[in-house]
Amino acid sequence: MRCAILLSLLAAGCTPLGWRRTEFPPQPYRSRQFEIWSHGTAARWHGVRIGWDSVSGIPYNQPLKCDSCRQSIARTAVDSICSAKPSAGNIVGTVVVLTALLVL
Image 1: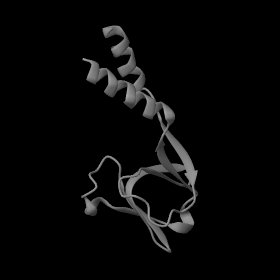
Image 2: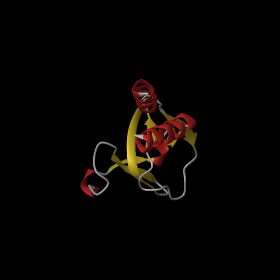
Image 3: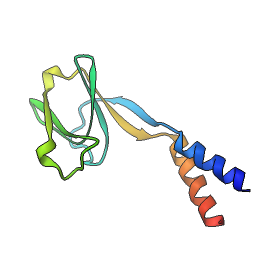
Image 4: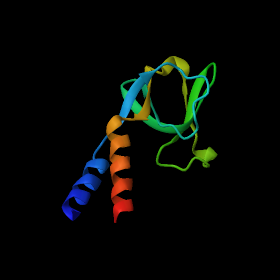
C-alpha cells in the first residue's frame, strides 16, 4: 500500500505542464504562466499584460506583487507566446495524491 502511494506521489510530481502556443490573449489571468519567445530565447512570466505596442510581465521566480520586477518587450520583437496549461497527467496525479491522502 505504501509503495503504491509513493509511486503515485512520484508520478504526480513528474508530470509536466503542457505548453501550448497561443495568440495574444486579450486579458490573461494574472497567475497563468507564459513563455514569451523573442530572438530565440524564452522569458517565463506571470502577471502578463498585453498592450497595443508591448508585452510585459513579472519573471516567474518573482512574486506577483513585485511590480518593480516587471519586464517589457516590444510586441514587434515577440516571436511567439506559449501558455502553460495543466495536462491530463497533472489532473490525474492531483486526484490520485488527494485520494491517497484521504485514505491514510
